[in-house]
Length: 452
Image 1 (cartoon, helix red, strand yellow):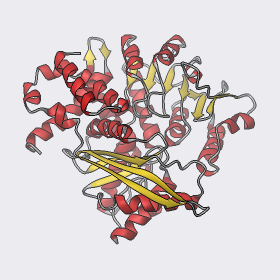
Image 2 (cartoon, rainbow, N blue to C red; image 1 turned 90 degrees about the horizontal axis):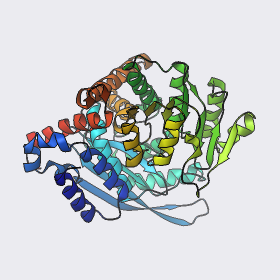
Image 3 (cartoon, rainbow, N blue to C red; image 1 turned 30 degrees about the vertical axis):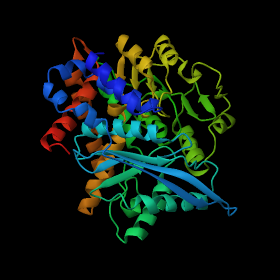
Image 4 (cartoon, one colour; image 1 turned 180 degrees about the vertical axis):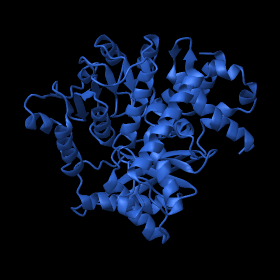
């Protein structure tokens, strides 16, 4: 890392203490820009790094609500409006006990470059709360969402800031949030994405992140004359991203063998076929059950509970060729990365946000495997959110085939941008390439718009 970037990171950490995920996200991007920045001195003189890493606006607010027992509960809400150089702020809401300001800032920072890569006119934001939907009744979730949106509605709008879902925020939560926004503002607008199909949603939106990660993996494999057909895939998580990653892997002839949640993971050596995937979707989306029930339903599968004392995740220690981390940040550490390499994995396509530590990322790059970083590989979700915004503006709906065609084109373009800026001899460093491609568009737009 150059002296300039080292000094910048020291200042950023001092200014933003106790935010390790934010530090990591910034270092991952700017660390790969050092050589490029030397060729563009105007970025340094205009202090673009300092400006692009500083949110335009940070909102933090209390969210009081009543439990079913009539007891007062208080959570904390966040919205970080990171960068609007390319368009309205755009990014999801996360409801999870781990949410804090540093987590939201890291997600918003990542979103800046991810949205830039989609080629769509979207700025970047992220938000959420330390509220945990797990174990709450529908009525409790509704009360919380209504209280959360009562404050958030002051700050968002279809031409200002358009939130979406993330961990803990699915169709149910988006519905409650949208209903309260409509009540508060007395208007029916495309202020949220991930909406129900009956009231402004887009086909393919639930599937988009998972489908996009697989499309990106297929594009990477094609550069070496390979396809995904016949390959074994490790997939973490069991929400929308993981579910539709599995679905698209099956479409392309691959065999997913793992899924997980916070309680542990299942390994099904025979493969998670379409009937088994249907069971998972009912389990997680309708019954809101735990993944261990998969092993109770399918006796050949093995459930392994989480062991917090382990220094690695055993999910990543099975024979496979493909890896799709689709759960949460930093779920793949350096030991996990080594286990993946030892077990034959040659393609990693990240469905979650920043699921690999910097050490794991560096190990993948050193071994020159096909490694698709999150801001590129999982951009399909926000890309289709952008398409949903377009459909809302036009007051029309596109067919499933039309949206999927747009998604495939966008993922091809994102892959091509990574190739263009990341080719190093006969190897493509998609981390470097994606970071440079995403950065240039935002940075140049900021220069065009003056010191704002």
